[in-house]
Image (tube, rainbow, N blue to C red; front, side, top):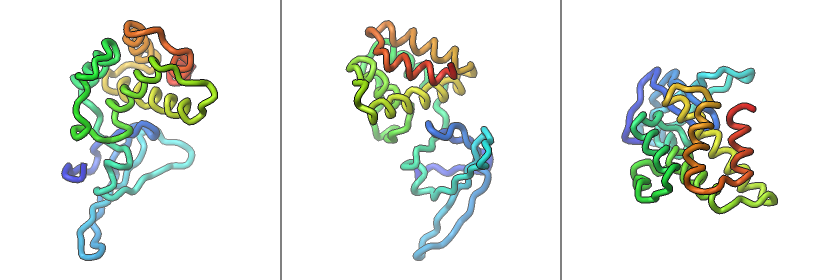
Length: 176
């Protein structure tokens, strides 16, 4: 992402922080190099009035990315429906842990493999994957979280029986 430049008011998405707007850009010189820093403000304002300041070179590693297109969102939904790993773009095309393709892949493998209740870390990863994917796809399709959860569950149900922990993660993601 360091080759892609953003401007003020561009929208970026993060699976944990949601949709953020670039509020400002600063250019600094450090060790003889020019460094751009983006100031990001979440669209959902919370009590802490959180703001992120991230160097251009660190933006991709931080998990922020442009919202995916409707075409890409439909491809992710098709992948969840048929489980065809050949549909997944190469990692060089997205290459980030919090990218929707990675979240969809994690979700599908968790649904099929059956995450164990005793493995807290895997459960937390599953919860984050589900929440991030549901929220971003809902934004892209311009529907509410409950509708998005229903669409994803319908797709997943055609591949295999859905793991109860996956169902619980979707229940939390829909706000129930």
